[in-house]
Length: 356
Image 1 (tube, rainbow, N blue to C red):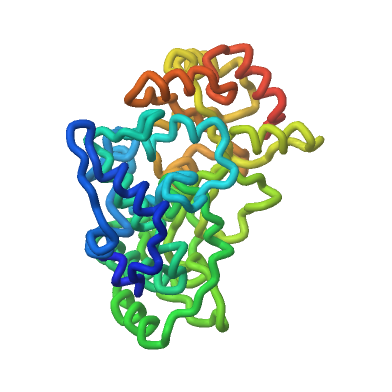
Image 2: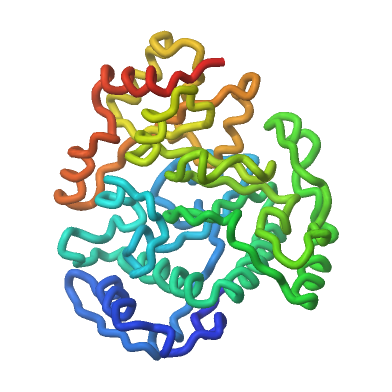
């Protein structure tokens, strides 16, 4: 569904000059300067949950690669590109984030700058009126699960919000509306799908025994969610069985691993160059007692369960995607957390101490 900032009870006073400046940068193209004012911003339509395969340039999001699941994604603006920080542990990746691939070092946008424009509008709505945002997000999730088979939701498309800490309370009329629209939909996943992908999920419709404050995973306990995160397991952990987290290797995770004596027993995603990924996948014998996956085969990390053995954590390789400009490509090449050497990868593998 489409919304604008007025649906979130926002007015011109909620829009600071820094946000307007950024929106003007993102709305413009290399050929033409398009100026927007606060009234324009308030009336611009955007969606919240979108089906990733319809707009993605990355094959791992295509619906055929993620079957039987369908991914719905919420895409906020990365890091501080909206003037709000949505990813406080962003490391070197912020220099070449795909969520801002339309920008060069001078903040001059290419033709896909409108995507970042809409991500910024969503981010403004989230930070300026979180109560209304969570209400509309819940309704949008209901709309998504009504239209898609085996739905899976990814809330951090290009952000790293701790959604389990986002507590809210829906008005009774909204909660009743959600219950009435979803009663006939649950359980969302068949016994066959649950068995094949080792799903442990509630069959109930909407969880109504939650007290005054709850988060989205508690409310939608019968829906699968997943995300990638750069927080450490000390900050984010597997508290909800319908929310799967994959930790992304970067400076924050690296520092955590170095100061811990025990093994890192969580699924971890590591960015590698194309040729190195090929070598690692062809020479898995070098990494015994571990399961290494080509993360670019699909994005729905729920699918990883089909190869998981005895709760063994997985190493998920994602190929470094070259950005649209030389500046970002150089930043990607310079990052010590993007691997292109087999020995460097072996060193981090040993440090992870992943074993069955």
